[in-house]
Image 1: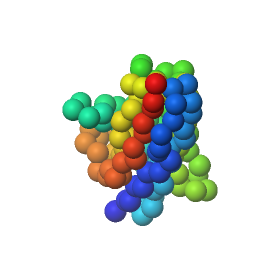
Image 2 (image 1 turned 120 degrees about the horizontal axis):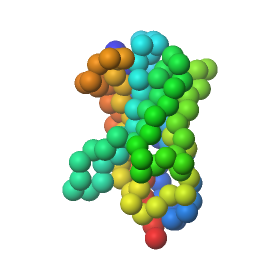
Image 3 (image 1 turned 30 degrees about the horizontal axis):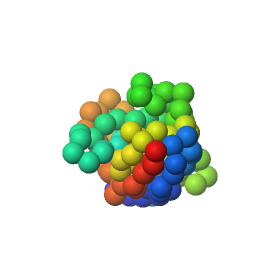
Image 4 (image 1 turned 45 degrees about the horizontal axis):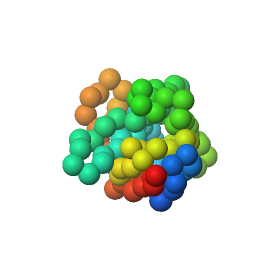
Amino acid sequence: QVQLVESGGGLVQAGGSLRLSCAASGRPLDDYLIDWFRQAPGKERDFVAGINWSTRSTYYAESVKGRFAISKDNAKNTVYLQMNSLKPEDTAVYYCAARRLMQRNYDYWGQGTQVTVSS
């Protein structure tokens, strides 16, 4: 079992920055991908960014490229999402999730953290 706990959300003005954290505990994640998603009210959950736990390779949705950066700290077993140049349309609940390599379904989800960007 793996537990994922997000934190770092809050209210920020447009153009500001936030750093979200996804702390993982439980079994090792060497064969996992950790992805961030977001869901705005009345909308579907969308992929934001992801990282390969072992190789640290990263990938992003087009809408956040150049503004968001995903990284991880092995010592803290934590994945970060640095969000810069935030826009009102980035407002959403942000979730982290874990899935095995070559698997489409996610095995574990966090509870989410709210990000609100005011104009």
